[in-house]
Image (tube, rainbow, N blue to C red; front, top):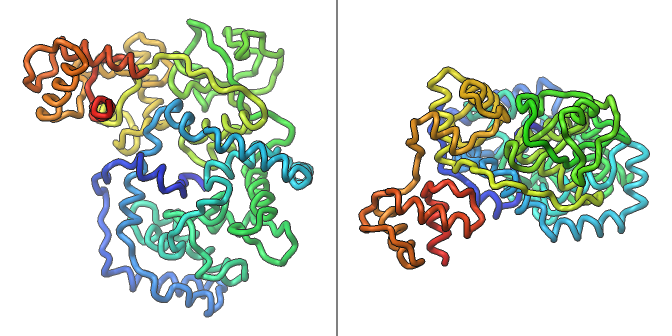
Length: 464
C-alpha cells in the first residue's frame, strides 16, 4: 500500500499534471500473450479455473497508464493540500461517525491497538467515508499496471491476489470496482493487503471492504497494526521551532529523544515546554523552517508505509489529531514555495549536478529534499530541506522559471493595469514594474510574494 491513488475524482481532476515523458514503452498488442502468462502463473499458484476465468475479456487500458504518469496532486504544498482535505465536512462527519460507532471503535482499539481518529482519518481521505470508492474495473486496472513497464513487479502480485479474492468468495469480479490503481473498498486496499489484513468483523463469512463498515474499520486497524502501529503512543504533535537551530536535523528520517528537541528550543504549540522524554521523534517541517512544524513519533512511520508522499502522510496524521481534539494548524509563513514548473526546474538542475531526485515531476519528495539540504549547506543557508524561490534563484543566477508565454504575459500586464498598477508598456516582458505589481497582488492573494508570474497566478487574476 505504498504509493496509492485517491478515489476522489474531483481531487485528481483538479490537480493532475500533463503526462510525464515516457521512460519506457509498452506494446499493447503483446497484452493478450502476457495475460496468458498470468493465467498460467495463477493456476500454478493454486487459483481455481473459475477464478482465473475472471481475466477473460480484460483489455489493456492506456488511460490508466496516463493517470499513473500524472499524479500531480502530490505537488501541492502541505498548507494547500491540508486546507483542502481537512475540511469541515470531514471533521464534522468524522466526529459524528466516531460517536455513532463508539462501541465498535472501542472494541477495535482493544483488539488492534489503533484509536478511532486514526482509522477515521484514512476513511475520510480515501473515500469520504465510503461515498466514493471509485468506479474503475479493478482487474482491468491492475492488469494494465502489471503489464506496464514502470511498476510491473509491484502490481503483478496484486493481480494474482485479486484472483485469490474471487476464489475465496469475498467478492465477485463484477463487484471488484474501485480506484484507478486497483484499490478496493472504503479505505482503498490493494488486493494483497485485502488478503493479508482483511477481517470478517461482522461474522458473515466474508471480508467485504466495500459494504461492511465493521469489516472496513477492523481491517484498516489490522493493516495499520501489521505496518507496526504501537498501541497507546502518539503519532504527530504540532510544535513551535526557534528562529535558529540545527536545521539539518529536521528530517523525517532523523530521530532524537523528545528531550533533545526541547534542548534545541522546540516547544509545544502553546509555547510550553516539551516533556522530559526519551521517546524518539522526528522534526517534520513540511514547508521548511518558516511553515508548520510537527514532532513525528514512531507511529508516523506507519503513515509513510501507507503512502510515501510526505504531504499526504502528514495531512492524514494531522487530520487524525484534529479528530482527536487538536486545533487547526498554524500555517505560519509566508513561505516562498515553488510552483510545479519551478520545482521541475530545480530537479533538473539538481539532477545535472549528480543528485538522485527520482523522476523530474515537480513533486518535492524525500529524494529532492535530501538534495536540497545538501545544496543549502553548500550555500550556507539554513538546511531545512525545503526549496524556495530564493534557493532556485541562487542555483540559476536569478533566472527563475515562469510558466507564461509572451501572449499570457501581455494578458497578465493588461489585467494588472485594470487593478490600477503602472507596469509600463504591455509588451509581454516581465520587467521590474510588472514584477513589483505581481508581488503586491500575491500579498493580496495571500500567496508567497516572490514576484514570479505563473499560470496559476494569472488564473487568479482572471477570476477577479
